[in-house]
Length: 154
Image (cartoon, rainbow, N blue to C red):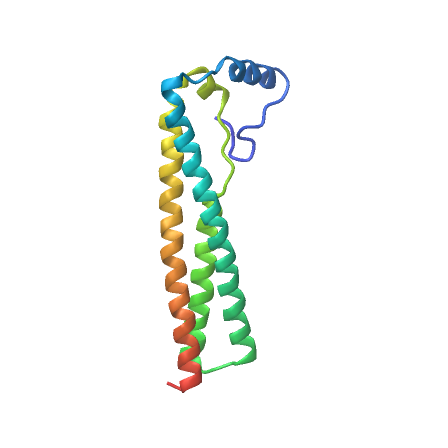
């Protein structure tokens, strides 16, 4: 099994074998919808995860600014630090969604296994995205609460 770092990278005889397997793979017309659908799902997840990463970056920046410009008491500081941690966790999960996955030579040589593998990748990334999205909402709530606690002196 190839390491995650070298997954999908082929050199020497492996690259020739991979290219030959790729040339032999021609999805049947009846399989084209499933193929296109699964790849479109992965593209949608990539786009959504990119937006969520930007949102997480905004939350981190906002919490950091509030912590440094408006230092408050322990309660508001704890809420803002929790918002930072939640935003970082959400960002890390979003990065799992946009990670690179290439079809291996084995998958190309066994076309009946490509679709289940793509579905597995889609399912994993969907769960990561949804969890990341939920954590980002918690981070937003923590940020707003931290600012309110600070400004209202609760």
